[in-house]
Image (cartoon, rainbow, N blue to C red; front, side):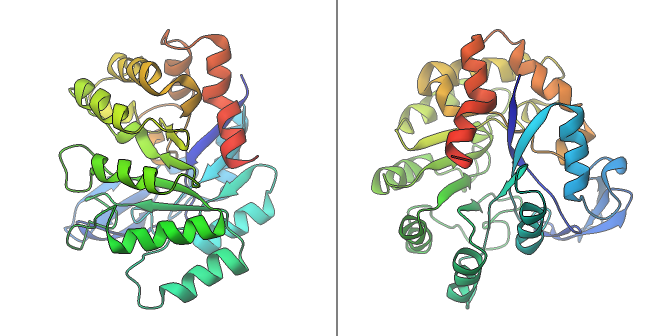
Length: 302
């Protein structure tokens, strides 16, 4: 099975800023919030205070992953330059997404550097209440003026837009607003992270949301879908059910495999994240080729 992982992360060092304040590295893959809580952020063997592209490549090579898309967010901290350097060093293995805070006073200078000078072709925005744009400010509206400026810029530059709108029942989970943005910007390919992050009892809610987002310019990654069903464990029957519903509504050709590594690997092996999708009985052989490779190759590497 050829694999492209469309949702992976590297970090020169953990430098997050979240709803719990600063998130800093404390060594051996552990991190600490400003509230004092500590936790294992990524496997110790993948790094001490950060995760290098070489550490990701080791996991990829051990699991037959040909290429990966490097995404960013506030949880690990913005890593634009580090991502750019990784893609330059390993151009046949990685493509990278830039990110920026649209509320920065000098946002135009930032965009000029990221997209005109460094040449990023993908932009990612996380709006979640936990570690996205809404983690430390009032609600940000996906169809509001600030985000519309971001989407207009992406349309002008021909960028693919990756969006994480957080979890259901939070102010960030603005499915209707997202649907209106998708309709407004048909020229942009949108990739929605985590299949909208449904939890264990969200089957009907997910189906209702997906029906609103069916469009020729919309794709979904399934990163952390299994993780979001905890304490459920492999083979993740609820995640499989979510995949079955998603296939029936948006089609297998709109779904893309992602691992959300390195953080998900503190709880599960990479192989199991692959296997529950393969052996869940949802997809035919040709559909699995789309989910694991063909669609991602078209959307991110084509």
